[in-house]
Length: 109
Length: 109
DNA sequence: CAGCTTAATTGTAATATTGCAATAACAAGA
DNA sequence: TCTTGTTATTGCAATATTACAATTAAGCTG
Image (cartoon, rainbow over all chains, first blue to last red; front, side):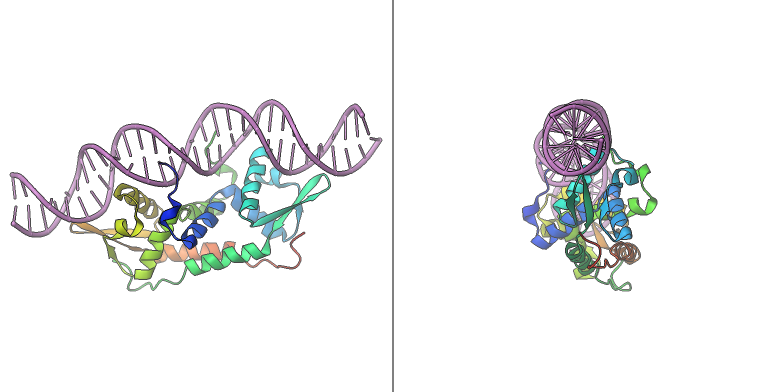
């Protein structure tokens, strides 16, 4: 026990859950907001921006890279991170589909 | 250690993370999709719909209730669940704000 | 090459989440 | 009241996540 029973659910449901998991931590939200705000490649500065230890920051970046929403390019001695616009749009679309309009009048007791 | 350092981040960043956490499990995605599809109060049937044990289902429902996105009304011997349209809209708006458009041309290396 | 800088990895501890059996609550009907 | 049906709670085990110190890796510069 303890592990999520992914096989009980559809691929789409697991996809949405995994995408949500990627942004289910304030540090990862902060990273994404920072990259979006800059709207450019960001080299360094993320550790100071977040206030977490360097390994922790690195771990969060890794998780975001694993789901593909950001990409990192080795830039000499440091690494440039940026939003992957294609995957970002996928997230956006999937969430938009999920958060379809709910008729506010007749759905609640 | 081990606990999320929420104090390092803004209220909005923690809000987004908490909302994402609420839908960061396929069972909870399935519950929400089911309620949205029905677009009505649902009495019973959720345990069979999900395929998880009754206590597990109850726990997921509790988490969704805790963040306010669904509400349950005791209906005699069973409970009617439905989407809370107000909170649902809050989620929708917050995610829409978060997933602002990213200019695909000049942001990536 | 030696030293410096920056990021990733490893190892480990603390905490959180997931899942379910067992049990409790609670209302409706016999 | 006793039973039945439905949901919630408790307790516990398994797994996952979060965080960081220590270390490693890898590129740059003198």
